[in-house]
Length: 281
Figure (tube, rainbow, N blue to C red):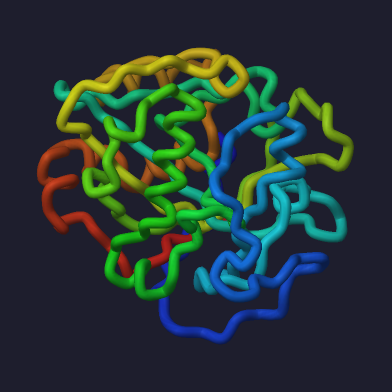
């Protein structure tokens, strides 16, 4: 519901010099210069807020640095819109063209208990293989960094094994730049809030060629549901259900036309828009 009433603008990406780094942001030096071998997902929600490093960008998606999820998501007077950082949103469909939804865990620090798309999180700085996409990878649509991050989080949140979601089966469609305060944050268990999202969101569709098995992580997810287009419309009309702002924006602007002919959307470039950043602020 936070998406409603927002001003919508469409920006066309072009080369631009990076703005000055946000306060306290750490500048990227080299290619993942402090990379470790792999992300293991260990620790509490609070541990991950402090340890995971988001990739900070300007409004043209030029990288300007990196900082913790904690710092990136604080909506405080010194940074009332947080720090703009890269994210991804996965929409995973089954053989019947049903979309897998998740309800975020009630224990989540940001946006707890909201229903949303299959998986939404952040490419991270500091790991190998790198999740930091280059301008070249964005321009040609390969975005291997975002796709690797998606595979990592699909396993962490839903127990979906990497071999079930190969990188080459994802279709990257476009980018969404949005900003939304967390209006539903009941869990201020980490001092430093209030919280919100200010993201450059890479939208990824996938319809795996083989059925996937899910085993939701209760630290991340309270419930899951496979839905048709009509079932989703019915759910979103239910005032008792709450939805993530990024999912509402994508539903309002894109989802139905992409879902109408899913095989065309995933199998062709008809709906791929590599040069546009859709801004909803």
